[in-house]
Length: 131
Image (cartoon, rainbow, N blue to C red; front, side, top):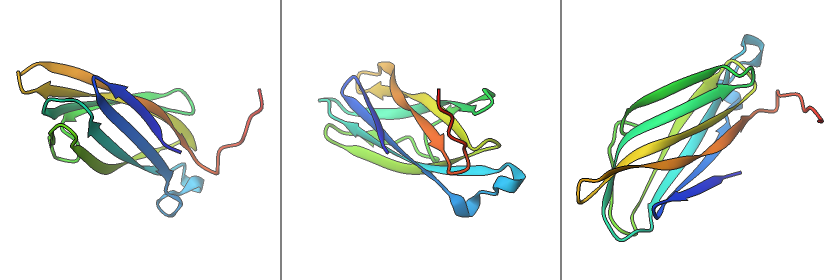
């Protein structure tokens, strides 16, 4: 399942994948990869400067991660351009939620934030609860 959101003509799509081979449920270690694609549908060149993530596990414990760029890069996206990367997230619970934002800068030097859609981290080890 993929999740998408567009802010100021910049579309962010995220597709999480549970990594069974890197996880160890008996040791409360669950790992996901997530692929992010950023597409500039606008008319001006933009650069990704910073990232901010809010990660919440199944127990409601939240951690925040922020810093420059993504996977060691601060990509520049011309009009019609895109950038795709893959990263990962370990949790001590079998499910969680991630959401965040990227700080972008346009050619005029204006900085603005674009939304990364909230997406769920689900594993086959989570018990299904009916409400």
